[in-house]
Length: 356
Ligand SMILES: *Cc1c(COP(=O)(O)O)cnc(C)c1O
Image 1 (cartoon, helix red, strand yellow):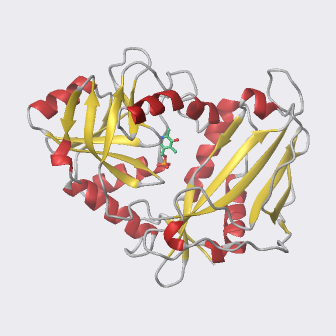
Image 2 (tube, protein in one colour; image 1 turned 135 degrees about the horizontal axis):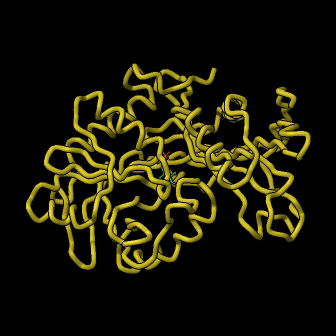
């Protein structure tokens, strides 16, 4: 493929939104990156073009059978004017893991990091600077054959769009309440749970809607077979601190291998804490709550980084964790990861990449 990225700049730049009212995923920048895949030819024609609608044949495969994957990452503006990406190669590796499962051809990971860097550089004026804000980066791949038949597409598009996003916690890091879902399931081993593929999210909406109606912000999924073991929360992995030890579900194919999860584990180990990846029964968490050893619980993911859990509701057994306040360790992880991301703390782990 040609590694030269053609750039066509917009002639009608948009008005930038108010930095204090960004929210999440509502505004998009002036440009997007696109490249095409054709069987026999591979990925080709990488280009940065003005942001705008895609023209798709109504028979386009992805619209019918959901052959697609996506990613989520962020670019940060530091106080001294640098632009940083956080572990972007991990996202591209994960794209290829998702691609393999969804029969989508492999991408060139290094080139795709370069593509993200080029796009962010073109739209660098869109990266917000207010405390806690960032530029959310959404790469995705869709199957584009105009054909109604269940088989892997012969053509694809890899697209990257950018969205300036507000501080996740404008009023300080607030713990969330979570409903433990005992009837619907998100994924099973052998399925697509470990892939960041669209259908997983469509399948999760009903439980999330029901939880909202009960006054909960998100659901904690249990395993698809016994409804016994903890999986993950919405779009976050989950951690528990019980009696000084940090526990998180092991990766067995049904949960998404989060980059924030991996970073959290690496940090905790570097601090000399005991971290264990294994099966965790919800009963075990409830027992720890009852005997007073459940010290902290939190979710990890790119959007919030760390999301402390203040309440878990399992079959109407309510667990109020750490008096509904953020725990000391959750806070330390949050401060460290966000500090590395926005350049407040020196990056001794080599996790960030600067965009010049
Ligand atoms: C993206 C995602 C996560 C978090 O992954 P990060 O790489 O930490 O952002 C966790 N669970 C699900 C289901 C996800 O889609």
